[in-house]
Amino acid sequence: MLWVLRLWLYGAILVLGWALISYALTRNRDYLHRAGRLIRWSGLLAGAITFFWLIARFLR
Image (cartoon, rainbow, N blue to C red):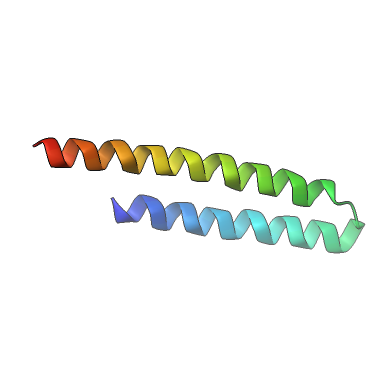
């Protein structure tokens, strides 16, 4: 299950890097807001998956 969180971290780093490069080139803060929303939403999803995985593992 750790690989899912690691994969999420790599994806978050890529999204943040894309947003920072786009902001540096255009000075449009919308890229930073989009990246923040995407990272927050995907983090909640990864947390929910981890939570249910832990519950299933403890119930076995």
